Amino acid sequence: MDRNIIVINENELTFEPGETILEVAQRNKIDIPTLCHLKNTIPTTTCKICLVEIKGESDLVESCATKAKQDYIVFTESSKVIKARQKNISKLLASGNHNCAIRNFDTNDWTSFQLDVLKSDGKEDLCPVWGDCELQDLAYRYQVKTLGMPLNGCKYETERANPFIIRDFSRCILCGRCVKACREIQVNNAIEFGYSGEDLKIIAKEDATLKDSDCVFCGECIQVCPVGALVPDKAFRDGRFTDTKKVRTTCAFCGVGCQMDLFVQNNKIVKIDGADVDLPPNNASLCVKGRFGYEFVASPKRLTKPLIKKDGKQVEASWDEALDLVAQKLGAIKEEFGPDSQGFLTSARITNEDNYVAQKFTRAVLKTNNIDHCARL
Image (tube, rainbow, N blue to C red):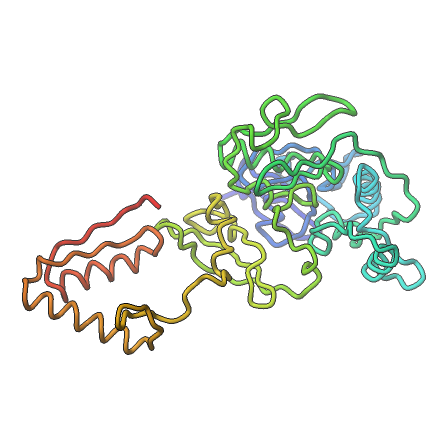
């Protein structure tokens, strides 16, 4: 039986009809960089970073939109490909405020130079995604020299007129990922490309602010943005150069079980992203509560110890003391008034597993079917 075979970097790989070169490469752990591609959406081919060379063809092709074909021989890092990527990365760096990639040519260091130069002038305009920017990573990877490169000015002011998302148009590379995420993944249709030519811009509802548009602030656009054009209003700020620990967990705002990654600095959550795009049930998507509703975790108003009432006042107690009191009270009520004199309310703020345990406790321990659940927060 004939198999569909494509050769990428001297590796013979099988492919399914309809698969692109990029999809075949990614499935086989071959890295082809891209800034505009978003999995499970229609390719836009705007960034021109995923270009590859096919033996026998004079022009480079976008791997995200080129279907794999039998007997294709593909090179992902040929000298021709590298030169094209360097040129396109250079254009993107020059398109706006991307000083993050400036390199110290004396020490070949990309990190201390920007910090030293900007902080020596007392400036605090470092990009909030500095160190976590895909464009910056590519500039370093392909050694694109940006020192002295003229930057094009931005005619659009930064938008801060909403409680969750900062839109910095001076850093936008017009890759279209945010539009794809909004329209094809979340299907909210809140943003789109507006105007044309040099005026091209990502707009919301006739160029309104996000708060006056159909945006539901799910933050999907923030997560897919490869640069610092879209950042949370509560961004890393001064702590963004501190080591960050990523912790995988389950969202507790409802019982769906969305998987999320917490970014923790100094034992405090500073950002939340949806987990892997291939991980159900949410496949990296989150709602506004899951992505932005985390400040309560470190709130000084949270109770850290149980409180029980003594002589008419709430006083701190140990967990053993509090649980013994609850068990005693429930047992006494059941003994005097019968099991159906009690009821149990569970919450959408806990997991399905915890809700299951609650109903087992109600029926097996309290001996009553009086249990209810409110899915509305």
